[in-house]
Length: 115
Length: 108
Image (cartoon, rainbow over all chains, first blue to last red; front, top):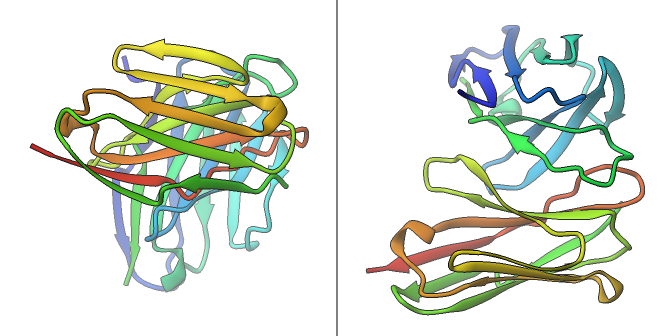
């Protein structure tokens, strides 16, 4: 059973298009995250949701909009894609922040290539 | 936010060698995780270790929270240990911060 899953695994698209990446976790966690990993492998958090509420929003352009229909899902929609959006996007989940035992579990990543 | 520094940035080993990876962080932390990103890009949990020492097979980790560092030990390295090792401390703001990683290559 996959704990954190993402679709699609690869996404190739043209500049200016709008695309979505989906994430689902079956760990029963309350908190989900989106990270961006650039070509130099640097991982930076973009968003975090706790029980469907946005709790972290780290200086990400407005073109990126996360949506959490329920606490097991966190989707990422990107409008007007730019070349600089090319990266690997990782979804992760954990128990609620504020609890001592936070441990993040990551999905397999989605490699986005903008042409 | 927390500043995280990992060293060395790159490491090349012969199979069977031991190594120590270091993670320094600038502020007190609530927890700290070590991850291995394998050559296929998968991020794998190694340790959740806000303080103390833990061992899992050939790997062990020690975090000295009062001195703001954590160490990851790899003994008898194998080619499958190749990849990038990240530490990710979590401070009071609960914003996870990743270090830039140590890229490890283990030659047969």
